[in-house]
Image 1 (cartoon, rainbow, N blue to C red):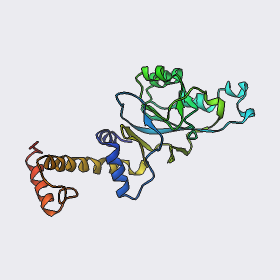
Image 2: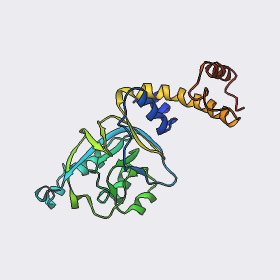
Image 3: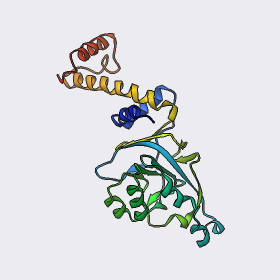
Image 4: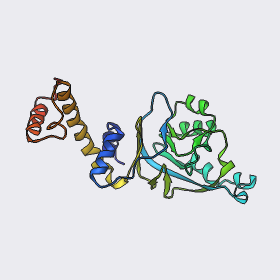
Length: 237
């Protein structure tokens, strides 16, 4: 993701991104059951680095397996690039934690942009005290090894009912988490800026007493009025 695209997306709401993707025929991109846990919410934009869990099987969750250097969850914490978002397929199990406070602290120190998962987090109060962006199902005390085995990292995953490919762009705010296919990120960012600019104009006119029909969406007269508003420097009245 180039700097201009990132800057544009950081100015957009998840709602705007959702509309831009809908206009392009991309519908199933908003994660279900994944919510912001920080108060106030900490919006994030970044490329997805993925980790996948699979159902627990005893021979895949022995102490020897968990201690191996190539254990995928441990590798993910140390290999997620600075600026990326760690997206964890927690199998939709909000009652099982995918990470706890020590690993959250490590992600913060390493410059990870945030955590997104349809699983839970343990040591939740300590995790949130780290002032690190977390979007997840909520608090959960059981560790991941209770019901998960390690799958793989940097592979296609499902999270919150949405397909996530490594490198997809994650945008999250108080409305939740949305996934932008990487190839669409630049145009979504560019056109989203224009969408929000027009919506500021439309909201201003509605606040002044104008009826919604003709303004949102705009008819030809509203488009002409909008052009005049732009030429005038986008006045707040």
